[in-house]
Amino acid sequence: MAPAGLLFPGPSLPLRCCHGFQGGLIFLIIFYFFCCSLWQCFMNSILQCLSNTKELRDYCLQNQYVRELNSNSRMHTALMAEFAKLIQTLWTSSPNDAVSPSEFKTQIQRYAPRFVGYNQQDAQEFLRFLLDGLHSEVNRVLGRPRSNIDNLDHLPDDEKGRQMWKKYQEREDSRIGDLFVGQLKSSLTCTECGYCSTAFDPFWDLSLPIAKKGYGEANLIDCMRLFTKEDVLDGEEKPTCCRCKARTRCTKKFSIQKFPKILVLHLKRFSEARIRSSKLTTFVNFPLRDLDLREFASQSCNHAVYNLYAVSNHTGTTMGGHYTAYCRSPVSGEWHAFNDSRVTLLSSSQVRSSDAYLLFYELASPSSRM
Image (cartoon, rainbow, N blue to C red; front, side):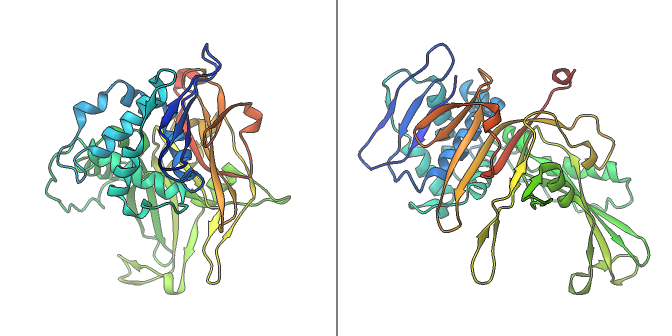
């Protein structure tokens, strides 16, 4: 069983639902959106990836979100409501039902006007705006607490990280955040006196540089190692050392303090240059199961192994391209390719490609690895 394909064609066509391959192989709903398909594929790709995020899917299907709607949010919960309706339609519609998803696009455009119109957009940016909007509308914090500026530098790093996470959740606490938000640790060490300062920040995804290793191929673990490797800050990049009271040469290193349930890894394929932007088409080899990230943990960690369940792909160049999605059904466990309105079965050997742009991993339960 899989959710619908999504298509964005002309203005007068309704959404039309149809089923195929009954018995759980494929549940196909073809969506006819009110706008141009070729330039809305970034939205299609991300919606399919989120629709196959099991806990988010269940959150919408079981109407759990209704109890947590925050009427103080900027959009007054309209975005979350329309997103949930769309997920429900994807998974529960009867054959030949006609539905209209135009309200979802209207609401995301109201929340983020940059998505008004039919221009192609970046899928990662759309994902960030959408998750931020959904989070704000089911934020359990109804009022903004007074900001307390406490000096936590005297605490051990692990305790400091816990206190910073607690402070974050005093302001930002939602089911969306429960799933997608992790905590990143940044360590800055002065090469003059050895003083080390640490900072802890929430993250919704990690943007990984692509590490090439001959033959034009890269490995996801090597990309993670490049992201977390120690960098030297010198020259104009020198920060001010708290102990030396002067700008000094320092080293900076990232590690993961808290792993999220859903880890989104963004492969940095696009680069901006002075003259023109470019795209890396390097093949990045990534595991479908048992991605072990414990070496990147800032503290002793026994639970940082992930399984892949969705990929947002980009084919083409910076001047023009197309987004698709590969998703593993949370119901059947089978992989499907989503290309606008077309939904096809996919073998696990076809999931990896040089078009992979966003990788969606879910934290494996300890029992599933035994």
